[in-house]
Image 1: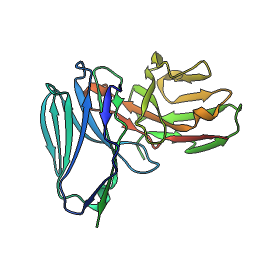
Image 2: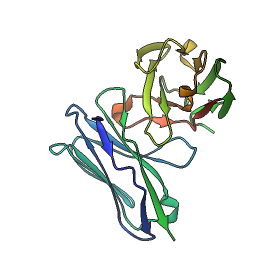
Image 3: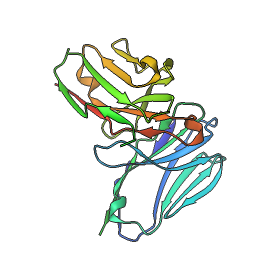
Image 4: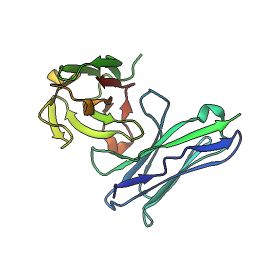
Length: 109
Length: 115
């Protein structure tokens, strides 16, 4: 079993929809959690960072961490075609990040 | 451009050849990381430098792989006697205060194709 599980998708939604992306993990030592966005053939771009449990909001993006359930989420409101990309969750407790396999998102105009 | 820079962006080589990738981190970032990403997977940690010291190497980094960071600036990742299984995107990332502060900025990657 992988340390971090992420549904690979693809997830296809109409423009304007609310998108929910999720990851589960097994290592209770993880302390910080990130979401990256990756366009095709590009490097990952940091979207959101949270430390420990709770919510964090940044514009149309909200990240949630539930350490008791070992579950993290990323919500995208008012999704746009430009949000079409692969979304990677990542987490760690030291200098090493463990990534999920990524969820492909397609936002249809 | 002040981001992480990687070169070359794409390398095609024949099995058995040696290849070298270069990474220039964001200036003043003393921490540098190499990750490998295969198709449909997330990046996997390979190695970590703080300044010029290589502090950890993943088990994924076989004896054919070597990474250096002379003088704590740019870094190189060399793969000797390449195999088809080495085909992947090699990502470099850098940070100033450490990953735990939410900082890990990736370059665009160097894509390796081994024929």
